[in-house]
Image (cartoon, rainbow, N blue to C red):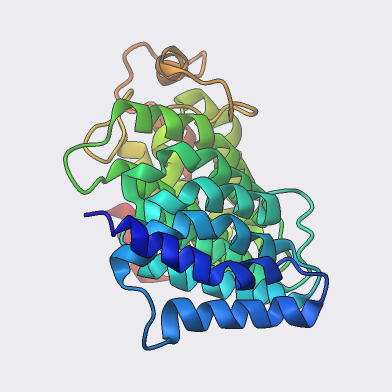
Length: 339
């Protein structure tokens, strides 16, 4: 039930001075404004109840989000932390995405990312994931922003940001493919097919990253998005990208690769793993303009020499990688690959 309009109006009016100070020329005044807003909205004994706060936040967020690009690092930090905590307190977090996701895209979804602080960049990518998880299936209209953030942040030199970017892509897939009620909508599948290529292409280069945890995170990201890749594009783009994992120096990464390969090979033509939902293709530059007819075309895209009616179209490209795992220097890995 919506909060009393009079209570929301009173709250907004009482915060107006602090809201104005968020963009004041005086940096110390801006910093104090965010401290004051935190106290009044979250920490004070007379802080608004959940219903009033939820109804007020859509009007508050546009001003609070300006702090993401403030010239003072401490202000940017306080802004991101306050937005994160307010999002967690809202009873309707999806209503905040129309202002939040474009602000995040403008900050960590452009190349090059201009935010100099590693910790703030990490916090903003994690904030995007929190927002997508909280919104669930209602995050679908913001898949473009997510893809842009993943694409830009995978280029970050900070390895934790790379891992967070992979987790963000996985969160989007989970949110759209596993709604709280019922089955994923056809539009959700089309949306994932449209934006998955951009995210996969961003993750593939870091399968050779020096940190094993980054390589493992990238593998998980590719695995989550694999169901939207056509057989032809597996052969042309994805298989060459994942090939280096055959000789990854970390046994756990190789083991995870063997598990992923077994799943990928078993994906039949025109179907994806989660519930048999139809997927799309990994086509460079297909991040925009894909409609449902395009997705159907991608489903039947196969290597020219693939036999007609082949039930496991990815086997030709990926089975050699799995067979190489049989000879893994770790006996358990070899046994699992053979199984």
